[in-house]
Length: 131
Image (cartoon, rainbow, N blue to C red):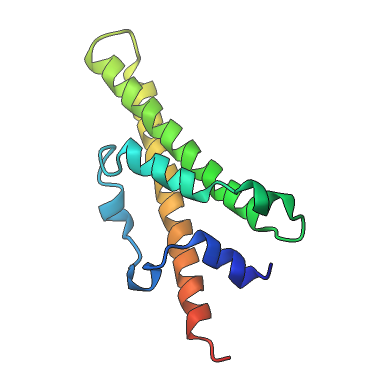
């Protein structure tokens, strides 16, 4: 499978109409993206067994990488939410740990958004190429 074919298997049909998300809007808070949205994205990026069986494809590894990134961001946001709830409910979670986990979740989310923006820009550039 060529690289463009790999991108087409990962991207939805409506991608040309999408615009890059600004970090300020995307990282407004832990409630910006729901857990269901993360699960849907991670499931869409999971490589299928047919694609993973083809060693020349290379798309399965890339899809796995993106899926792992989404799951890591989701886990960090869940940990930040749990730490914040622990501070609020006085369960003995130190404030500095809650702040650190919240900032870690925010930075990982910003990285994921920037990777998405770069992929979108690359896809749009490929679509503008004349064949």
